[in-house]
Length: 185
Ligand SMILES: [Zn+2]
View (cartoon, rainbow, N blue to C red):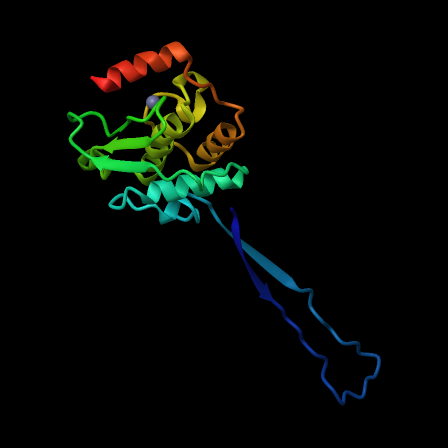
């Protein structure tokens, strides 16, 4: 959402009164409007900026709000859990609820807190995409498998394409069986 501040500067200069030369007309300078645009980014976006790395559940709040922008209602989903655990040093997050009825995201907070705000949002939206929608990596975009630094506008496009199902492919039944087999171990 673009926030634009308008600064309105009006210069009005009046003609001198009482001037005997009645032919002198009033001079009013044109109105000057100066526009300053604030570049939208992860740290000033109204949804993303409310997410806090130390409050993992705040990413669920953000995800629900982003979905609502595209008329996807997730407000009825209650079984959502984030657990903090050591994931071995190179993995910041894991979706444990793919192909399951619940949402269960593991987060290695030591790694997670060192990511940029854009990477944190990307990671959480990606993992929630797996658990909430059973989305596979084949959809690309938001569900492309690597954490990467994303430019804000591109990320907005990816989020939109995900929730509007432009870039969205579900795990197949066979993939789900495999995934459940892995997570059950
Ligand atoms: Zn993934």
